[in-house]
Length: 397
Image (cartoon, rainbow, N blue to C red; front, side, top):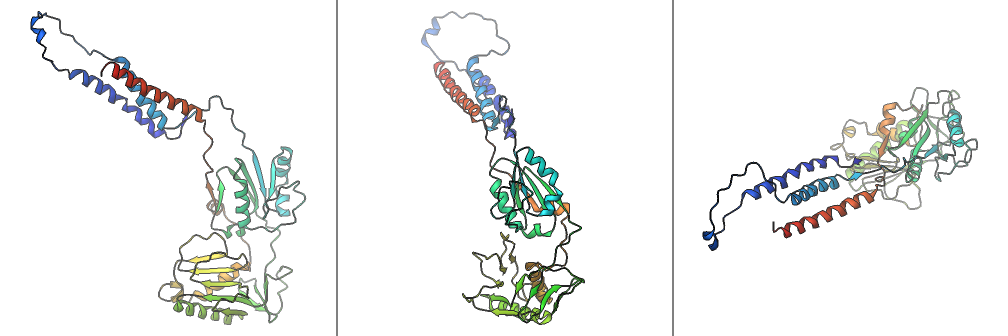
């Protein structure tokens, strides 16, 4: 037997209360004057020694009531006759050939045991065989969280197969059931190709081997780039603040960033419904963020639900933000732009401590408890209450 609230078992000590009251009640007898007593002869009786128990049945019932109440409040769980439940394993795999090749043995063993294998994508598709990758192979941490949420409803043990890199940390944390196992590997052979931006002037913006953002007409042959740029054309920016002082500060930082790196930025200060913005800087709440837009919201202390919405607690003005007063705002905005378009020179793996901090375990709904045992205990408690009242009234106690 297990107890969900074992600390309440200390309430069993309250069984001493009816015992003390019982003996105290016996000592509080009083003499009643009755006229016929004068005709009775007084008889010497030997004094009684020791403790005389009266109404023993009533005392036992009251003690049982205290014990039963304490056990009920501690929420007992009885699984004497229940068979141990078998927790099924569900395998969640990143749709990447290198992941499949690295964990082929584990996945083949799962297939032999008829365990379910799912791809981590928008549809969380069931994998018939790991050798055939799905058509939808786009992977990010948001899709990982969505796939976990879809499968966490079943009481199963999740087995995650992922490539360990900073792409996992796009979200501040990933909620996962308490029963899970993480399988990750670091690809030190095949380095990912870098992203770059192609502006309207024909210039290419990328990170060079010295980890600097540069603007060149031709991509450097020493680097391996993606076949298509991450963005083509001018970067459309919306700077819309209710605080006009903050708006002027941000506009100045955007202009400095554009001049230093020769970026082709098209900036609006009023929303144009005909344009799709790549970058929005504002102090107003974002209700329905677009997945392809980078949002920087100042003056809001919130935990982001999507990776492309960045909240800054401080307002971006010289009096409220230290990085504005020190002149670091353009540099910080440039870092946000690099991060959004994934222009980083190298995708570094996460450490074990970072992985543990990233995956936050949350309990599922409480396991099903055998309520029949508690029901019988409750009925017994009600029956004892009725019996105690009947015995007490019968004996006029």
